[in-house]
Every structure is written in structure tokens, then in C-alpha cells.
Length: 159
Image (cartoon, rainbow, N blue to C red; front, side, top):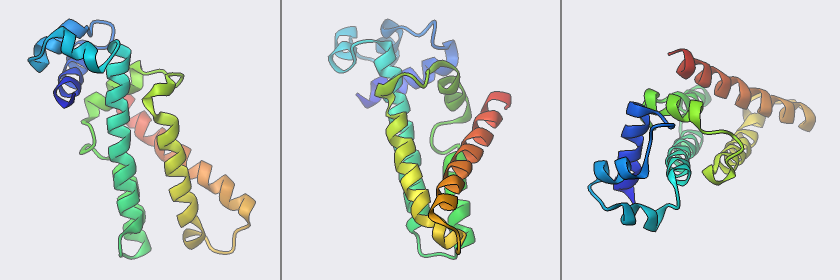
């Protein structure tokens, strides 16, 4: 399955989603088309798999950044780096996914990844901004998530 996702990532960047085919993915992965369909029912499911894999890596790195034994500024830097990093999917892949994967594709796991990130950030906020009410912390959590995500997406779209 990994070779199929790896091949699909390369092709998605090279040819874009409209020209991405299961036959081309199978050929690039060095497997039969039947093997592709054994794991994925269609190209949307393959691209959703790429998105899930990318999101899992980002969530893991954010968790590691927040849980490390380091001064708060270093942990915050690690979180921003995880969200904006090129080590979890190169910029062209992330740009292709941003352009071609609608947020309505529930099977990508984007909603789950965002929920996990929101919970992790909410847990860290009282230390970041002491003396805030629960309502203020909730508002701040969403402002931070959308600001960082928006900045990362804007950078990817506009290179």
C-alpha cells in the first residue's frame, strides 16, 4: 500500500488530480491495477489516503513538539514548524492536495486531524496565556489554528 501512495504522490504533483489515473499509479508503483483496487476503490480514495498519511505525520510532530521537555517558546516553535514543515510532504504535494482535495471529502481524516490539533492546542493554551477565561481560551484556540493554517495554506498556494 505504501508504494501505491508514494507513486500517487509523485503523479499528483506531476500531472495533477484530473489526469491522475489508477493505471498510471499502478505502473509507477510497479504493481498491477488489481493490486491498487485491492486497497483503494478509486483515485479519490488514494488521494484521501495520501492526505490521511500527511495529516497523521503533522499531528504526530505537533504532539511531539508540545510534549517535549523544553522552554515554552521552543515548544511553540516546534508546533509551528510541524504545521509548516516541508518534511511532512513536500510543498508541491501539499499544494496539490490543497488545490484538489475538497474539505467535504470526509474520508481524508482532515476533520479528525483538526480535532486532535485543537485538543492539543487547547491543553497548552493555559500555559501560553495565563489568566484567561475558558471562553477566551476557546476563542484563542480557534484563532491560532486558523491563523497558522491560513498562513501555511497561503504560502503553499502562492509559493
